[in-house]
Length: 435
Image (cartoon, rainbow, N blue to C red; front, side, top):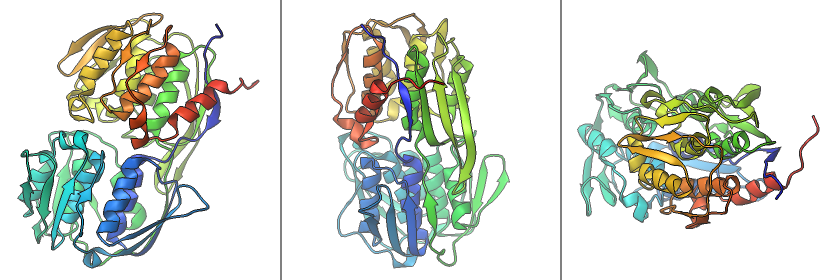
């Protein structure tokens, strides 16, 4: 049988985190916003539809995929939604938009799919309530569906126990509508897309301390702006790990965002001995980007992913676990309890799936330990629990294992990366470049 490898150079779709923010932050402007490279993910379509319900006009360019025009009336021109704000599967949509509507003079009703209804919302909503918003839950306390009765908010100082960029962003959006200053401090570094976009747009803020941000009420709407969204490193991570694990591979992921709060996959693969280069580093619309080239460099070495760095790539833990299962030595993940509250209990799902394909894995309450092997048998079922990242990980596992695996479903992948299977097939078919 011919040995499987990945070859080629291309750009994965636009960054989901930045796409969500570009759409939501458009509400702070009065005028037109132009977004290029917007993610085609269903999650981002959910955000776009929610913003339409609030009175923004969001239009896709028929001639240029990823190019959108947003016409915004500004915060004071937003209207009470006639329909519920359906976030679909998107935790970013429902949490960040909660901060936006908390200061608006009407009631907003949020809901999502069955997966989103299971995810905790109190860590955002309890804090918004402290600023004056009234939150009511329809069924299970702390979970969607829920309503937010917006009101005149009072600024407040928050010290978050977990470095959550979603919670930070929601509170800052509320703070931009509140009387008095709002200060949000994180316990450690997180992705700073919000602050970079604030700077790009002209939103006033200050940083009074380490991982601390201060905002005050936005007295007048901002002018429209243009923003280019970089390629999503969380999507690129699957191909990066695949190339690092499959003999003979050579893949370049173009125009990837390399925000310092998103580089876990880069840091871990480099620690493991991967041949990984950042080429053509530059800044676009306030975000650092680069072309990431990964070439197979022999068997990877074991390492530990510590709790303090998990926030810089919590979504990449599932695919990094595959690199760990094949490493020379042991691969440990610590402080990743957050994975139990994603689209699925990813920790349990990862360890169960790994055991099924023949990996030697020891589950922990906050992570797991893998004893690396030279190969993985496969031949087993691969549960996804309708979780897009588990499904994409399964497709990479399928080309790594000795025997094909039976993936529960792949339909969930469209939530974040609709063309993933096609792009993977392209890399599998491409012929090695002679360099």
